[in-house]
Length: 102
Image (tube, rainbow, N blue to C red):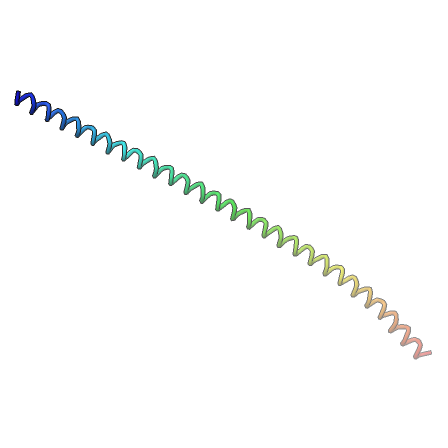
C-alpha cells in the first residue's frame, strides 16, 4: 500500500512536470508569436511612414515646380510690360530729339 501511494505520488509529480513543461512551451510559443506580430506591425508602420514621407516629398516638389512656373510666367509678363514701356519711351525720346532739332 505504501509502495502504491509512492508510485501514485511519483506519477502525479511526473504529470505535474509534464503539465509545467507544456505550459512553458505554450508560453514560449505565445511569446514568439507575439514578438513576430509586433515585428510585423512595426515593419508595416515603418513602411506606411516611409510611403507617407515619399508622398509628402513628391507633393512638396510638385508645389515647388508650380511655384517656379508661376514665377516664370509673372517674370515673362513683367519683361513684356517693361519692353513695351521702353518702346514707348524710345518713341517719346525720338520725338523729343526731333522736335528740338527742328
